[in-house]
Amino acid sequence: MTQELQHQWVHVSYLETSQMTETYGFVGSQGTVNLEGLLIQPRQPVSRTVFLMMHPASTLQLLPLPTALAQAGHAVLCMGSRYAKNDTALIYEKVALDLNACVRHAKERLGFERVVLLGWSGGGSLSLFYQSQAQQPTIAATPAGDAIDLKAAQLWPADGVVLEAAHRSRARCLTDWIDPSVRNEHDPDDRDPQFDLYSPQLPVRPPYPKDWLAAYRAAQLARMRRITAGVLETLDKLKRRGGAEVERGLLTHRTMAEPRFLDASIDPNERTIGQCYLGVPETVNTGPVGLARFSMLRSWLSQWSLDHSRADGETCARAITVPLLAIEHGADDAVPQPDIGLMYRACGSADKEMHCIAGASHYFKGQPEQLAQSVRLIAGWIERHGW
Image (tube, rainbow, N blue to C red; front, side, top):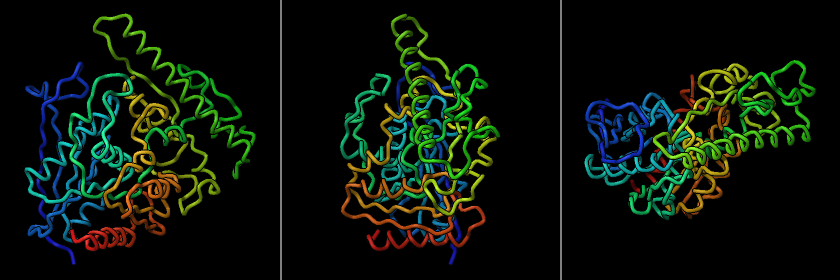
């Protein structure tokens, strides 16, 4: 039975100073972080629990799940971070402050008694990163060394966490997806033919030999670390030089060359081979929506560097003690099949459960039955906890 819904625009604002302007704002916004979102709930709400959804770099209110949950009687608050739809300057430590402001707003202003973080896709590792710092704060600076004290911020912990179709981290995804054939970051046509995944002259074909795949993964990691070394060198040069120039932009070519999307034997699930959640992988490799296509130096360290980013879901999950529900999509065409299970097993909570929805793609596109199953899993979990 579906319910008539109400949609309420939500504005969350708080003061913050920054050494530079990171995102476009408006007159009077200097020194203030402004976040926007949408509260979706039944016109006659009965629950005092709200599902809070935030993705570090996207908005989520147009996904099918928020509306489906609301139609089943639940309140869902979809909030964008300050970097919504533009992750070029994204600093995860600042996104944690954004999420904290939304958790507080949900309780203090909207009157909800409990907040459950519903981490979808990239929102999963964000939720675990936030909750780990809310429970056991450790961070006093960004990976670039800029002061940001999450312990002094006194982040409000959520009451529970739901992971759905969530990967372990953006840094891990980029490391698995980046094209290792690129030898010169300033010339994407200078490529190593033994790792040029989409070339007709590639010496191997799916299923890829294990020794070749291991070398391919090593070359991906090596390219990531070459980029990171350049980032660190440039930041150090700017710091030593002094003056008002403190940042630069970074263009990263070819960031979707994941063999898993061409070879069903790698992390097998029910996904469609030759496709990924963004379309044809070869097209995405050079397209405008590729991960980390454009980034600032500080953002690379906080968001994309495997050796520096703290928002790793598997690592952060170890500090989580609140109830956890983990939902894997059986035909996920974005998230590596092991990721949900790895985060679930790492979670420190004694109250946790995991399920897999067979046949579910990343976005439930054209899949009303799988969407309904997700709603039932989440609703049943909430009911068992008396929320």
